[in-house]
Length: 224
Length: 224
Image (cartoon, rainbow over all chains, first blue to last red; front, side, top):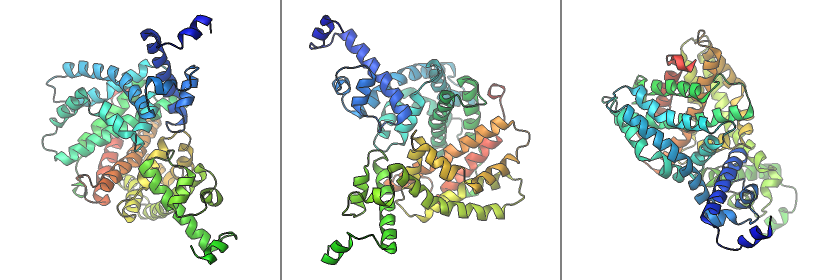
């Protein structure tokens, strides 16, 4: 608000200032998208909510709506991936399906726990995965990440006799439960609705139970 | 395009004509929403795709975007509900969880099968359930329907010793798999991508296997 700030705003932003502006935009966008819908919110609204006098700040710092969505996914996925790498090392050589399902689910639920309540990222991700135009972003940035791929290969190895197409289908079911289950749990916490699970840790354990069960389900004749 | 049509368009539509216009709008909207996103598409675009010279046709026949979404859900849910009522009668008195999971899943997958390929309704529903503002519509119209409630009560009765909060959580997981699993399978069919399941019938059997397994999963100490 000082004269100095007003003057400097006409120059190229300093690196640290640009970083904090980008961070403010990412935070504002994630919340608005989660609560009101990715497509209901304009880049102008995000810029305003991020406290940017310049309504074109999103465009300047990120580009399009899709670029902004990609930046939000990347920001969080860096933490999730690092934790998954750690678990992959811990479980190396295991043939217990529960270990690999844990390796899929825990890095995500633990990361969401660190965000505090309310968090927004899980609801944001569910929208991105469901929207026909944004969906490829989540796939490219998170669902084909190296650590996730190694996790899925390890659990495939736990079921050598299951037909590959059934394994693939059950992997997909597991991914759907992870993305949409976390979004619903996050919503429950944010709204202060009753939940049987007091923590992300407990919710994650329930999700692991369900996902392990899907993998171990007997095949019926109709489903082959 | 004739003079007669141009003249009659200024009068109140005849009932049969209004019905076919409404039907054309519902069909166009469902496809556009599924392929391009519920929020990316304007009511004007829907009116145009439905072949309506009047760009305000959606507003005239339905009202808001939310009203249009509700009408699409109601149109399909009438078929799903009728089929679920039939199955409820068939399975009355059963204590086999597979019967009640079938009662949840089959009416939906069978209805989607009748729509032919490409269908759009499953992808549309997944978006509606994920969007924070549209979500209540799907809940009110479909997910609290009487036949569905009776189905869920019947399967609760199959697990008298499972803590109610765990039953509730697993019901939610089943619902997520149904809505989002069908959406992904519909997309696979529509895109002509490889799938292990040649028919909705086979896909539904796989979904039933997975959902039964979730219900029967052993409880681990961490998830209580």
